[in-house]
Amino acid sequence: MEKSDFDHLLQRYLTGQVTDAEKAKLEAWLETMKTEDTTNLELTPEEEQQLFQKITAKIESGKPITDFRPGQLRQQKAKGWTLRIAASLALILVTSYLVWQWTKQPAREEAVTEASIDKMILNDGSLVWVKGNSKLVYFEKDNGHTRYAELTGEALFEVAKDPTRPFIIQCKDITIQVVGTSFSLRASTDSVVVKVLTGKVNVSSTVDNSSRQLEPFQEIIYTHGQWQQASFSKDQLLTITTNTEYYMNFENSTLREVLNRLEQKFNVTITSSESANTCRLTADLTDHSLDTSLKLISEVLTITIDRMDTAIVINGKGCL
Image (cartoon, rainbow, N blue to C red):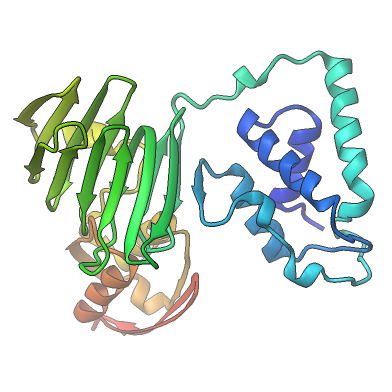
C-alpha cells in the first residue's frame, strides 16, 4: 500500500532530514503519547494527515501538538500497514539517535527554507502565504469574536471578510487591524512594513497610540517610532505575489483551467462534467473566497454546485 505523508515524515525523521521545528513537534507528541495506553493503537488516514499537517505547518493554530489525540485512543487490532505507535515509539527515538551517531549529519541547516513559501488556510477561511524563516501564530479571542495572529518574519495575507470579527495581527509594538482585505507584511527586529493590495488596513503603535490607515497600493514603514507612508506601483504586485496562488484573473479561460487553479489555491477537489469543462470564462477571482468564486461562476454558467468539505461536484452543461 502507498505510504502516507506521515509515513514519509517518519522516514525523514529517522534519517535526520526533518527541520528542527518538525523534529521538536514530533518528539513532543511522541513523548506525550508515552503517558497513554496505546496498546494496539492505530491511526486512521485522516488522523495521520491531521498529525502530519500539525507537525509540518509553520503556523500554530488552535491546540498545541501535545493535545492531539486519535479518536478516543481506539483499542482496535492493527492491520498490516497501520502505524503502531506503542511498538514504534522507543524504536523511532533510539533509531534516530543511532542513525545520527552513524552518519554524523550536521544540524538541519541543510533545510531550504529561505526561498520557500508555506500556504496556510486558517479556520476562518483566510489564506496566508508564510515565507521561509517566518513564524505565524493564529487563534481566536473574546469567545471567537476576534481573530488574532502574531507574526515574526514575512507573509502575504488574504483575510476572509467578516465584519463581525476583526482580524488583528500583532508585530511587537505594531498592531494591524482589518476586516477583509489582502496585504503583505514584513516584521523584523527593528521595522514593520505593510503593503496593501485590496481593502483598507489600520496600522497603530502601542508605544504612542499613533495610527495610520492604508488603502490599496499604499505602504507604510514603521521604524523606531517613525512612520514613512508612500504609494507603490502595480508592477510590484508580481514581486509580492510570486510563488503564491493569490493572482486569479482569467481571460477567455476554460472552466477546467479555472477549476484547476481553484483546486490548487484552496486545497480542494472539484469534479465537473466534460461539457462544462470546455466552457470559457473571463473573470477576476482575485481576493475572493472559494464560496464566492464558485457563486460567481454559477451566475455566469448553467451549473449546479454540490459541496461537502473539500470535495466539490459541478453538474450541468455549463454553456450552450
